[in-house]
Image 1 (tube, rainbow, N blue to C red):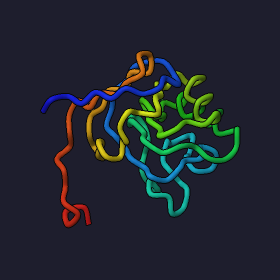
Image 2: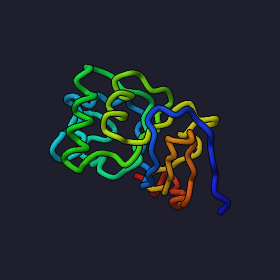
Image 3: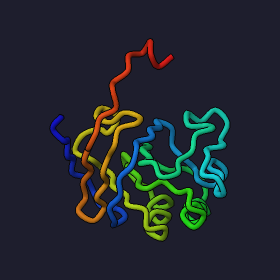
Image 4: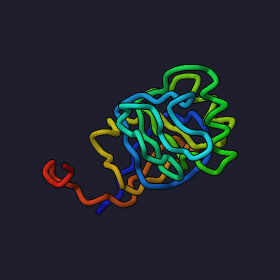
Length: 147
């Protein structure tokens, strides 16, 4: 496999890699994610019951209260934060949370991440240089295998 490298916009500097965890639903860190465990607790959220710890969390954008930035910081302090974040377009709450928590974050990739990335892929996020790199692709599962 030839690595796929996509340019984006730097929001929070730093470099990290991890397994992709995709959500097409926006995330509110206040009330949606348990800051002690890193588990998504929002009812009916696509990631409900899943841990974001050490994942490259891919979601369209944040939602909700400005306190969400501080919850991201709590996640980092508790060792249960994502290793990096990729957004379609980052809004200020997630941007501030990622910056104060030193979580690499890029958005506005040159290609839609939902067309390129799958759950379980290994991805490098370089927030300092503004790109992501797909290092290892998870085996693509058919719809039948996913259900």
